[in-house]
Image 1 (cartoon, rainbow, N blue to C red):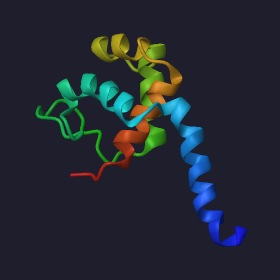
Image 2: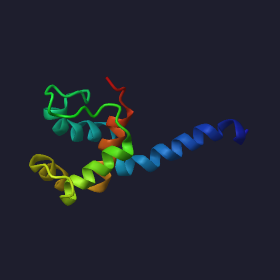
Image 3: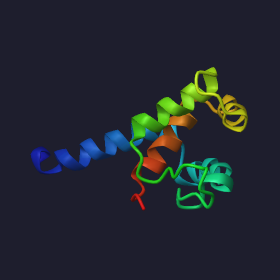
Length: 103
């Protein structure tokens, strides 16, 4: 019987492990509201000089946020935004945009 529920239990464990880091769905939506001003509601930027985030690799997005925060990747606005984020918030944002379909 346990074998039949193993995939469900594994998924539940992953989700519960991710929630403290990523927060609730509402908290993640609140986080990405700030991103949407430039990167669009669905991660598709309205301006040609702003990158689309939807469908990007999660690890890439996380690494870029960390690079903005450290100053290794220069961008005044992104440096400010990233310095306001915790590591868990960065992971949540990267997970969110990485889960969206690319356009």
